[in-house]
Length: 321
Image 1 (cartoon, rainbow, N blue to C red):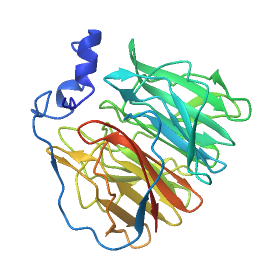
Image 2 (image 1 turned 135 degrees about the vertical axis):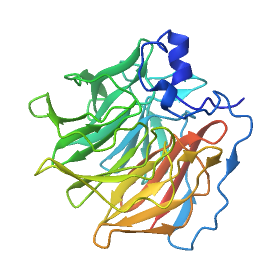
Image 3 (image 1 turned 90 degrees about the horizontal axis):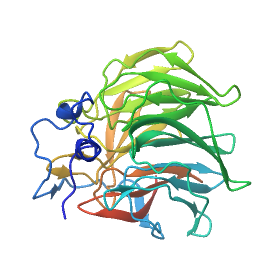
Image 4 (image 1 turned 120 degrees about the vertical axis):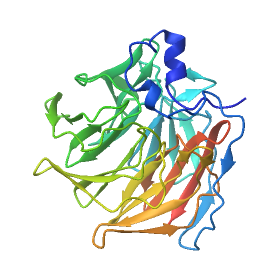
């Protein structure tokens, strides 16, 4: 079985392909199915180290995740070409997984962020098409609640939390940026990102939001930084490798970008951005090349979870800088 290369085939099954803009541009002229997928073979540098952890119970890709109190929560996603509402929690201290209350809405291509001990699952693709759905999970009670919807229905977006606010960025060919305030349960439009795209990744370093990679007429290495205080964007040094479907996190004063694809390549590489020097360097590669993965930081380590490498993955690998 081979992985279809964009969200478009899922939309075809739902009957939306004629009405959704951006589908024909997601991966250019690449056919809907890829018969041969090669791996990036560049030599990793011996900087940092990766270890394999306990597998996620449900193999999946394009799900949302974040960390709360040393626990990484993985919500939704796709497995077997179906959207799921599965929520599983990984305890980084015991290297073990437990199953939690499922999300109310099964969906893939969503994103998630944690604020003040609550996990927010945002947007995605459901049985009726693109979603603006926002659902919040409370680990203390193992319950979900529905929150104010985004103004824009979208999947393949990126989200990140900065100073108690959640920012939803891009997705499906749009440059829309909206900010969610959990205290008021309201969304506010913000300055659009300079280059609209889908399947980018976002991370936060020193109070600034970094948006990297993604796809528009092919994979991108674009790096743009959003300042929440001034509501402005600036463009930075591009990544060494064009890729979409990657994961990104901020750790310390660096941004880590890992995995992703620019077909026929699926990447294991990890690149690290230094905001002070505006430079990228290559770190030790992940053991498993993949895209559609999710990443979270817990206790000074980065956890790269799930994804796709020709099949749905339950792989968990941890990086120590």
